[in-house]
View 1 (tube, helix red, strand yellow):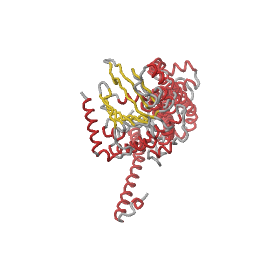
View 2: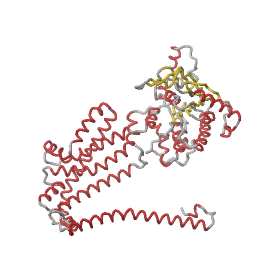
View 3: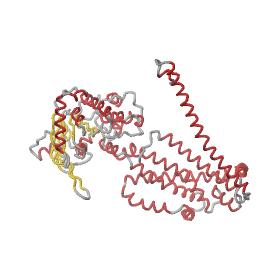
Length: 274
Length: 282
C-alpha cells in the first residue's frame, strides 16, 4: 500500500489517510511558462471523511479545479502527498473508484442518454462491479430522466444533459464523486433544482462528494463543509463546517443561520482578493 | 395531434382558430417545399434557354458549339458508346476513391497515434499534393503502364489529401473533457480510438468523402487523357480532335451525371450513418 509507505516515510501523519476518503498534505502545483513560473496551488492540506460532502469555494483562478484534477489523477502535483481512499490517486483511478462530472456534460453526441450512462461499463475493464449496484436505467431514474433513455444529447436541455452525466459518473458505484462546477453553465432555476436533487442523491447513495463551485449559496447548501480558497497563489483560507440539518430544501437559504454563515464566507472570499 | 386533442376544454372559437393557424402553417410549409423543387428546375431551364438563344441567335457553327437539342439527340443516339466508355471510367473512379480514402484513413490513424510520423511525413504529403494532377498523370503512366492502374492511382491521389487532412482533424478534435473522462475511466488507447475518436471523425470524414466523390471522377478522366483509347476521358479527346462538339458535350454530361450520382450516394450514406447532430463551431 502506497499510502502506508508514505505514512511511514513522513511521520507523524497529521491526516488519517486510512479513514478519510481524500487527504491532501502540503500539496503544491507550479506551472512553468515561457515568461514565469505560476504557482497555482501552495501548501494545500485538507481531508474529507468517507461519506462526506466538501464544497471547494473560491474565486476564478484560485486553483480549485486544479485541486480536483489532482485528486482525479488528471494532473500530478509538483510536491505534496495525496491519498484517495487510502491509495494513490493513480491506484484509485485504475480501480475505478472515481466518478467525475465536468462543467460541460461531455456526453458523446452519437450515443443516446442510456448508452452514455453505459459507457463506463464498456471501457477500462471495469473490475469491480459490486453486486446490487444500480443499473444504467435505475441511475437515469435516480436523476429524474425516466422515459428519456433513447434521446440523443442534442434533444435534451442543458440541465438534462448534466443529469445524464451525473448518472454516468455514478455507474459502477464509485466511492468518490468529483464535480467540477457541474451546474455553472445552467440557469438559476435549473441549478436550484439540481442542487436539491444532488443533495438527495448524496443522501441515498452515501458517496463521498467533492464539489467545486464559485457560488457561496451552492457551496453552503450542498456541503457539510466548505473549503474556502484564496487566489494568487491558490491556498486554503479556511475550512468552514456547515451546521445545517441533513435533510435540506432550498428554503433553508432564507433562514438566519444560513445567512450568517453566508456572510462569513463572503467575508473570507473578500479578504482573499488583492 | 389536432387542436382539440391539445385543448379539449377550450371554447370552440379558440379551437377553430388554432385549427386554422395549423392549416395555414401546413400550407406555408407545402409552398416552401414546392419552391425548393421548382426554383432549381427553373434555373436549369433558363440556362438551357440562354444557351439555345446564343447558339441560334449568333449562328454558331456546330463544330464550335452545339445547340442543346443537338446535344440531346446525340446523347440518345450514342448512348451505347457513351455507356460502354463510362464503365471503365466509373471502375477507375470508384477504385481510386476506395484506395485513396482507405489509405488516407489508415495513415491518419497512424499520425494521430505516432506524432513523430506526422511531423516527419506530413510535409512530404503536402509537397506531393502541390504537384498538379496533369503533371502527376504522365509520371504515373510511365510508372504503371497504359492500363487502368495509372488512372486508379491518379484518382486515389486526388482523394487522398483532403481525406487525410480532415481525418486527422476529426480524430484529434475530440472534446477535451471527453478525453479526460476516458482517462478517469482508465480507458485504453484502443478504446479511446473506437469509442471516441472514430465517431468524432465521421462528420469530418464525410465532408472529405463528398469532395472525393466528384474529384475521383476528375482524376480518372485526366488519367485517360494521357494516352488511353477507352473511357470518358478518351472520348473527350477524340471528340475534340474530330470537332464533334455535340459528342464532346454529351460525353461531358455523362461524366458529370456520374459524378453527381456518386456524390448523392455518399450523401445518402452520410445521412444513414451520421444520425446525431454534427458538431458545430469546429
